[in-house]
Length: 148
Image 1: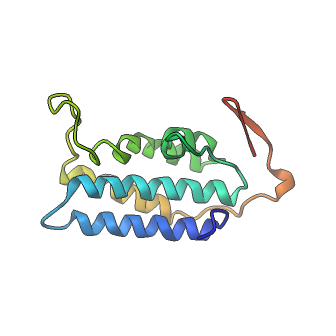
Image 2 (image 1 turned 135 degrees about the horizontal axis):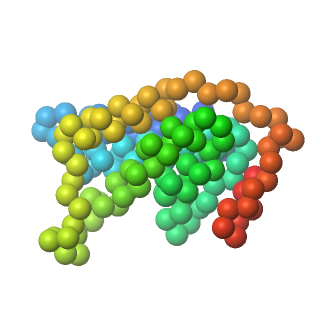
């Protein structure tokens, strides 16, 4: 997979959504399903950014922060992405043993996973306008990083 191929990102997003769906059936594996819901959203966000020629943050967990990625998405898709951005904790919250089981975030229940998975699948499937020509893409500074 080329990181600069938006179609490859969408294909990976669909694979993660399918994995979440499979992990969601009986007997459900909610923690693993939640992780794949997040991954599907992240890869769909990155597909939009790649298609638009916008660089996204990498490293130190920044590339997994759906709020940061959603803020970079151009046009009307940004509002849709922000609705899904609160899935960021699902990337890690349930993947590792809790330091303190009394304060650990509980895994989402089956209806919550279904609702969020359906929203991510709709986001992946939503038609998007063609990406702008390279000269139409404007540079933006995000934090200390110049984003194209």
